[in-house]
Amino acid sequence: MKLLTATNVSQGLRGNDFALCVEGELVHIGVVCPRDDGDPDGGCGCARSFAGLNSHRATTTAMVREVPGFTEDDYVLAIRSSLEQQGCDPSFAEHEAALLRCLVRDWPVGVVVERRLHEIVVRQVVQP
Image 1: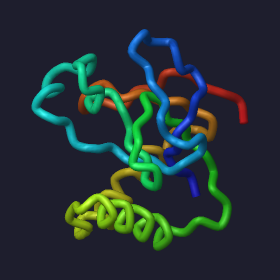
Image 2 (image 1 turned 180 degrees about the vertical axis):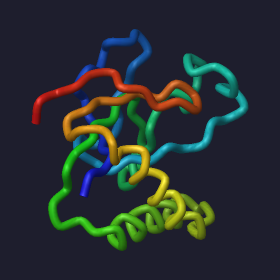
Image 3 (image 1 turned 90 degrees about the vertical axis):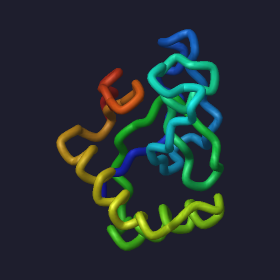
Image 4 (image 1 turned 120 degrees about the vertical axis):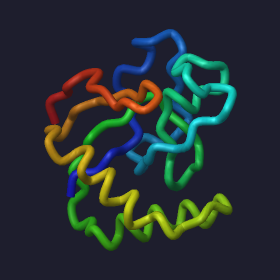
C-alpha cells in the first residue's frame, strides 16, 4: 500500500524547513491554526507541515512509500489511534484515510511532497 511518510529528503530546500518526525513515520495533514491561516510561511509552521501519527511532531517534507503488508484497516486504525491520543475526534479517521490514499495514488513511490496551506505539491522525485 502506498502511504505518505515523513522524510528528511530535500530538507533545507526552503529556509524554513523543519523535520521533527521520525524518518518513515506515517503522516497526515493537520489543521492550520489562526496564526498561520492564509500564510504557509507563518511563524507556527502548521500551514506548511505534515503531522506524524506516532510522534505527534511535524515535518515540512513527506515521501510516498510502499508499506508492504499494511492494509486499509491498519491505516484507519493508525489514524484513529493518533487522533484519540491527541484528544481529537476519531470519527473522521476512515474518511481521512481514504483522502490520503487518493492523494498519493497517482504519485510514484519516492515522490517527495511539501505542503503550502491547502495544496500538496511535488518537491522532488527520488528513485526508490
